Image (tube, rainbow, N blue to C red):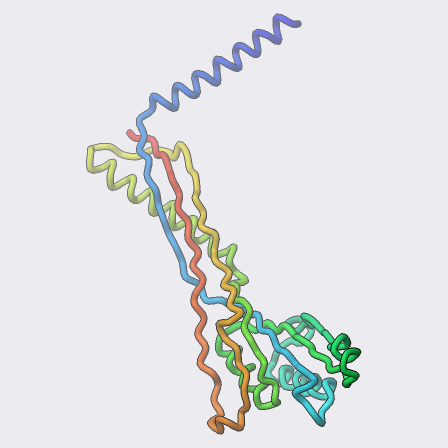
Length: 229
């Protein structure tokens, strides 16, 4: 039994050596292919801040109710796209100077286009909610676009290999090896990209802010060895 096991180990090692030698003796061409795609973000994360100190004769609950009602009128799914980020109170300051504590509440709102983001800014400004910022943008279909870019890169590599091999009187065969150098797509963080803070009374021209977000680039590079015939 021991002799049989040793024989199998020797045969296995020999097979591995033959495969390696076969790969090295084959004629091949190695090329790279690169592709990219610029996609528009459809997940825009906005921060809305409501500070009680900004409303002398109106409660925070009243302001929140108006905000939620306005967002629903605009067709925004409140249960899905609106969450509370943070709620704080200046109790420490209250104990020091014995003034009334004021609440501050932050919401995260997700919208799905630059146009919709502009409409939200204008609507909230008309309600007196002027502290609005865009935190980051993403694309919900990024995995789909990554696959499309991979396929395009492979096709580019094959086209290049065909062109080069035909120039020297050869044709390409099967792909012997494929590797990828994926460039991670960028999620744009923009805490200072857009901050709206002011008073609508200062500008009586009611208009939707023109907002454009930089597109997200999805790109990859593949390296392929094709058999050369």
